[in-house]
Amino acid sequence: MIDNILSMYITLMSPILAGILNMVWCKSRILKSLAIPIDGNKKFIDGKRIFGDNKTWKGLIGYIILNIFTACLWGLICSVSKIEQYNFLYVNHGNTITYNIVLGILLGLAYALCELPNSFIKRRLNIAPGKTTKGAKKILFVILDQADSVIGCVLVVHCFYKMTLSFILAYIALGTITHILMNMILYFMKLRKNMF
Image (tube, rainbow, N blue to C red):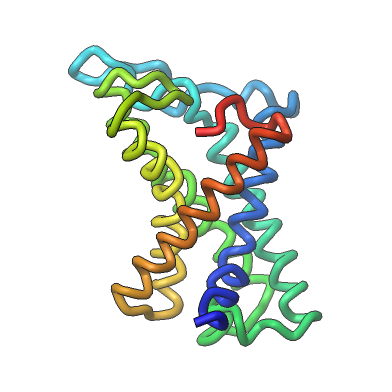
């Protein structure tokens, strides 16, 4: 059990690091011209924004580029520190630069694109970008806000390393809890406006 948990973290360390770096990237003034909404400020047929202001091209591009960087860096660290055998992504594939670039692209896309349906749903429910609601819905959306990108990344891992449904669900649960804890840390570091 402990070995599986360790392997889960080792496998997804690259997108965890990329997610943290992307918070810094999105707050930086570098390429601020890309900080435009993916939905182009367009509205859905219900008259409400499709995704909102927080889902930007800068964030999407940042997730992809930073995941490529962290996947290559983490691949090197795994190789040097001899922990490759604990990384699910290297069980059936060699730890090469080309493979890590592909992983970085896929993990970055999965991380960013899997956040969009949640944003779409929240706009339909009149929940402002970067905010949550109250009551029982708040708990649901706090969990969903943290789980969406984890689901995407775990599904990418599943494409390269087959897992049972129960293992996938446990992986998503662990990733969601980790994401919640990371957001709390980032909030206290003033890299997030809201804790949840």
